[in-house]
Image (tube, rainbow, N blue to C red):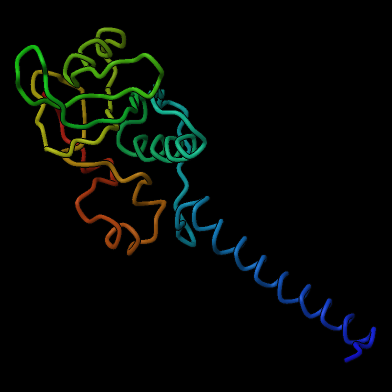
Length: 186
């Protein structure tokens, strides 16, 4: 059976059209889903330059979420020091007790107990309010650290003001996403 040149040409354009449509849909929906959080249509914007940030997390995604949390923290503490680090429960091998630890991402860094880290940060920043942005999955409570604020649960990556109302509820209802949910360590 003979194929006419015209039928090959129409198949070529047909393939280009549908291939382009599928590629565009993948790029728009597939990659877009992973590259940015579900932002609300009109998030409130706050600009404060007084919040100082120290972080122990790396990556472009963290650049974005730390910037969003800096704005969120400034709503309650305009001159705070925001300390950002991964947190989880760990076993203290010297005492055999479970405790809340910070896990810095930098190579060669070892986990450190949260209370010990905060004492060092407070000593280096006397008189400044310290806000610890770190997951606390076992709800450890801190005491004896005035002007230190932290969450009693895991931290939502994006502050509530940056996310659609239903996104946080569907994803993980037991997380902190608002600076007014943070408690004092005093």
